[in-house]
Structure formats: C-alpha cells, structure tokens
Image (cartoon, rainbow, N blue to C red; front, side, top):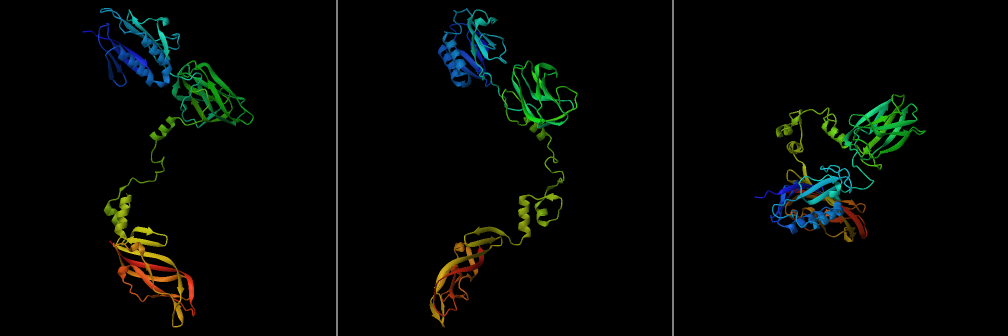
Amino acid sequence: MTIPHYKIVEIGGKNLVVFYPQFKDDEGYKIIDLENRFPIELKNEEEYKMFLEAIITSEGAIKEGLKTLADLVDEMSLLAKGPKGDTRFMWVKYADDDKGSGMSDNPDGKKYIGMAFNKDVETPSDDPSDYKWVKYVADYEGLEIGGRNLLPNSEKIVVNKGLERINLTTHIKKGSDLIISGNYRVLEGNPQALSIRIRDIDGNHVDAGIRNIAVNDTGTAHFDVVFENVSDDIYQIILYSDESSPNDNIVEYSLVSLYRSNVPMDWSPAPEDFYELIDNVDKAHVGLSNVQNYGIASQSQAENGTSNNAYMTPLRTKQAIEKLSPNYVIDTEIGEDYILKKYSDGTFELKGHVKRTESLTTEINNTYRTGNLIDELIPIMDDSFKLIYSNAWIMNGRTNTFLAMSSAGNPLSDKAIRYRIMGNNTSPDEDVEFIIGYEAYGTWS
C-alpha cells in the first residue's frame, strides 16, 4: 500500500492539508480544509487544477496574488512526475517580500508564500531563489487603521505633578503604526511642553518612543501624535504633566485614544470599559438600593389586599381590579359624534349628538313645529345590544324650543329616537340649525 505524502499549505487565510501520491501512476489526490475537516477527493490532475482555480475565484481580497498560483499550476504536469519508485516533494516557505526576505516555515506576520515543486529531497531548501514567491495577504500600503480604542478608562486622566502609566488592553506588535490623540488642559503650573511615551512589556523605553507636545498660551488644546514602525511590541503608554518627572504641574488629559493607525480618529471608549461596567453592576448602580427583596403577590393577596411585603405584576393588578371594582369599563368606542362604553356587568352607555337643519312650518295653536323626526342609534344597531332607555334634548338651536315625542310609535327594538321640535314662534321659521343630544342605556352580550 502506498502512503501518500502531505503538506499543510495556508492559502487565503485557510490551512489546507494537501495529500499527494508518491508515484506517477498512483491515483487520487485529497485536500482537507483544517477549519471544516472536510475532505475533497481529487481523482486526477485536471480536478486538482480546478480546485486551485476555485480557490483563486473565491478569495477576492487576494485574487491578484493567487493568479500567480494558477501560473504555478500550469507548470505542474503532476505533483509526482517520476516513474514508480522515484519520489518527488513540494516545498512551502513564507517571507516578508517577493525576494524571500525573512524566509520562515511559520506564516505568522508574513505576506508572501513561496512554493517549489518536484524536488528530489523532502527537506525544504533555505535558498529563497529556489521558490516562486506570491503575495497572498491583502494590505493597504502606507495605511493602517485599527477599529477600537486600546486605552481603558481614558475619558479623563489627571496627571498630578508627575506621570500616569496606562496599560493597553491589547498590545501593539512590533513594526506597526499607532496614533495617540486627545485633549490637554493645564489645571495648575506653567509647563512649556508635555510628553507622551510608549513602553515595552517590561515598561522599558523603546527606540523613538517619545513625543513632546508644546503647550499653547491658553493651556488647552487637542493633540495627535503618531509612532510609525514601532521598534518593539508596545504594552504601555505614559502621560507626563511636563517634559520630565517630577514637576509642579497638574494636567488633565481627556478623551485620550490609541488606535492601530496613522490617521486621527474620533474618541470612543475601550470595549473593556463596558465589560467592566457590566461585570460590576449591582442594584446600587441601577438605582435599586432602596428596593426591598419581596416576592410576587399571590392572587389571594392581590384581591384581598392583605399583604404589604409583595410586589404586584400586571396580571395580579388586573385580578385585583376585577375583584375590587363592582363594575368597570372593559371596552370603549369613540366616534366623531358619540362615545360607547361597555361595562363588565354586561351593560352599556351611549352618549352623542346629531346635527340637523330643520324648518318649523307646521302650525298648531298659533305656534309652529317640525314634522316627525327620527335618528337611529347607529353604534348599537347590532343584535348584541338591547336598548332599555333613551333620551334626547336640544343642545343648541333656536331660543325657546323644545322636543316632544312624535305622533309615531317609538319602540325600544327600533333603537332610535323619534321627536318633533316645538317652537314658540308665531310665524314659520325655515332652515334652522339644531344640535340634538342623546343618551341610551341597555345591555350587551
């Protein structure tokens, strides 16, 4: 049985295990994505090429660099070209540039991958010229922007006659750019300049790690200081109230930020500030210091009002109202000219008005009135309402007029009011505007 050789190759941020046969007449290739543990069976050279081309298509951010990998594929007839018994090997290295500078077996921090195929020995060469180099990590030349503030508790920092050390929430790697921004205000003293310094993991000075800020006449201003290509990993910054320490000045720094960047950005709190607040939340932080540790009231306690050491929920409040209130409104319908209320005991109340323009032209005993009028009680015409009582009156209209029952019947089942408008006028009166108020009571089901 032939045991296939393999290499682990990182392409586009993915670690791929490439299994390939030792001999030309062995069948099959296999590639496993380490992240998903999913094997891809490749039966021949064409499928192997198609697989690499698929990687090129899917990795848009590094597409240009991976096209060179496709050119390397064209140079391969097979990973193993030799006859049976002639084993061939593939070499993979990583570097900082296309010349193979800083060549390493470790891809961390490297932007270029180098490949060499069909080699006679398994141990990779240390000569960069033996490899073809391809840039496979996307970056933006000359611009590095980090997305979060790395200084905790940096909204206000008072430096009292000396210095304040601040540890970064995450360290800055060697070779990176960083920018420190903020505002200063001199509270006491007369410093000519302030100083900001960066330190390594042990709190020691790093090369080119000092920036001084000239203090203006007002003693307050904004500042941005940039450290490019830092010479060591950075774990700490120091804010001074003068160029040296100790001194007699007190300086307030505010809205201080440190970003992986070389361009200024707006201040925002470090995410760790929020984590600390969340971790330390207790009832005092949310204004609950005086809230007693009571339980929820039972239905009996809510309805009978027998306890003073239990809290009411919306459900318990509803149950108490239903128990303690003999009758309460459960539904209200409001129209343009009426209000209809339905009560818990099965009764209803309807109040409203109608507007009419009528003429008082029918003479009776030397006065004039209207003919028979009718207004249906539209909101309760549904069969679920039963009318028990109704009444009507003149709310506005002609002076010294009143309502009287019409000569026609007015049965409750009709759910209407029938009436005449009677006046004391001794001559006909036409087109008089009236507002008729009404009320009605009954039951609903």
